[in-house]
Length: 365
Image 1 (cartoon, rainbow, N blue to C red):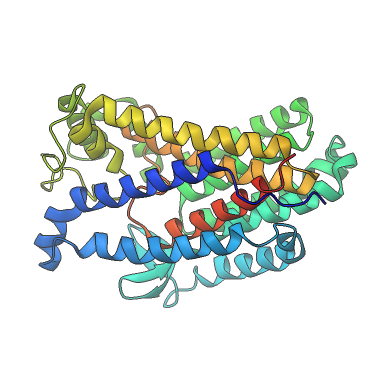
Image 2: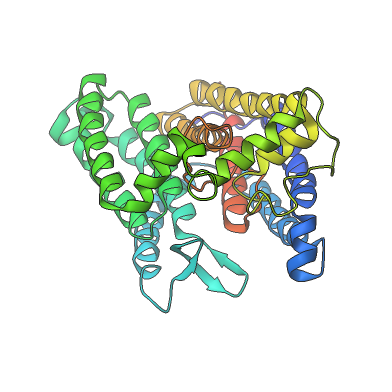
């Protein structure tokens, strides 16, 4: 094992700090009107976001200074616990329904999403599994099917909630990790085709999913129904122009764009800060992903390398899906923008994962 450096990746720390700061500012800006209307306190959402951000920073500091190899020991237990939580959350009376999905465990406004924990637990376990059995990954039955079976099982439980967004991120990051471990493209393409047929079946089976697809293809066909969110999002992005309307000057947050502080917060950023602000935020995410890839390449062992790939994949896939939805390039899936959108468990868990990534960077060759 290589000796740890005195400091983790500075570029990564700076990008995380800047994105998190922008997130806190924009959560306040996007939610102040809604918070005052519903709760009589314009700081209602940002105060809660700040609490989880502070907890997340403490978690990041802890994991950043804890040898990442410790997670190899606890990966299996973490995965089992997350599977149990995914089952418990489906039980009526225990799992809390929010936004039409039974995906929360908690009391009142505070709660956790087991699917968020599963993202990290699955990456930890796959990194451990594939680092120990890398020589078999090119074999379809013995090497590829077992890890993909676990991913499929977790995705199935998440879809029973249903939570397509979290499931898509977990699957996307897992496939990136499996590919990086040496899986054959032909095998992945074959399974990808089968998965696509299954996804089509899921869409057809539930009318609301079909409506989301048709709403994405032509939102103006149902402007007050399935196309409403995308249309209001585009109405926010368009007027933003090059430099935006100014911080705090969004019009769409006045009850036009539903829940502007969560899934569609990038719409408010584009409206208030314009193309320059949106592009600057995307650049910060690109820097974070770049440094994550660099950490994966220079990690001293296979487990560290695959773990870095998986954590970076979670960030990259989630950013890609969220912004794709916001600009109307993808169907609405209900997924937050990492480190930016309002959300307690997702923010804290992601900062914890990024702390692990920073620890890996301390051992880079």
